[in-house]
Amino acid sequence: MSQAETAPPSGAGAGARGGAGAGAGTGAGARAGTGARAGTGTGTGAGTPGPRPRNPLLNSLLNSLRTLGILRSEVATTFRRHRTYALLAVLAAVPVLIGIAVRIETGGDGSGAGGGPDGGAGPAFLTQVTNNGLFLVFATLAATLPVFLPMAVGVVAGDAIAGEASAGTLRYLLVAPAGRTRLLLVKYASVLTFCLVATFVVAASALAVGALLFPVGEVTTISGTRIGFGEGLARAGLTAAVVAASMVGFAALGLFVSTLTGSGIGAMAATVGLLITAQILDSIPQLSGIHPYLFPHYWMSFTDVLREPVLWDDLVKNFQLQGLYAAVFGSAAWARFTTKDITT
Image (tube, helix red, strand yellow):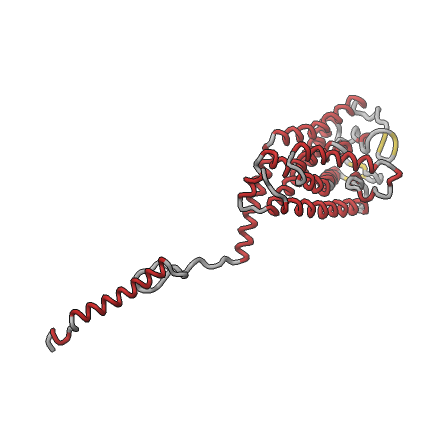
């Protein structure tokens, strides 16, 4: 067969091939440029599929990592402030002052001691310090818990939201993909971190000063039994953890107050004022009916850790009360903050 017979007419063949090619290219191009299922056309009609929806587990993991990153940044910011250094320095100085005062008063032999945990003058555990420096941890926690430690927590909690508002940085924090609920939880977690660090700063300072100024050894519990120094040290650590946990409810109260105002100083003053008011109410015998519902009522229950065996009744009541305050005022802070018009 001749070449002329096998080849299609040049005009028709070119038109057909040109038409097919044009159709494929134009179709793919249309899908790539304007189609709802946009893809990068190649002239063959095939497009690249869009991004697939992420796995819910992966989304949850990414959100958790993002939250941890925000928390790490917030905690670092809290502990970089000069105010935080000043608060921790004051708390660390309290055991030093108490230890030196006891050393000067008694000469290190307990001759000037005048009281004890079950009676007499002086704070609980103070008369035991000269016999065992480990008791300075318990004595210092008993001295700082009513005022110094919660006042420091109140300053940090009251400034958590209101301080950002007064500085004009709250709106910028909310611009980031954090969300108000996540930001509030991160703020609360950073306050709780400060509670833990502040309590253990007091305990560590007291332990160092007690070991330096007084002898250490076996510990005589409130029940009269003796335990080894290692177990006594573990009891001291448990006591510090209990004291830190006792700040949970008060920290939530301070955070709620912080959402009510745009003044950091006002929020701190109001939080400390509530602390003093609750302490006064808890000391009036005629108001004994409301005492079990006041957040500082069971704070001194940490002394039961140094009994043999440990008495958990008041400790459990303290934890339950702190959890109740955290739930109530944490929810109130969330309701206020998530509906608040942020203008600064």
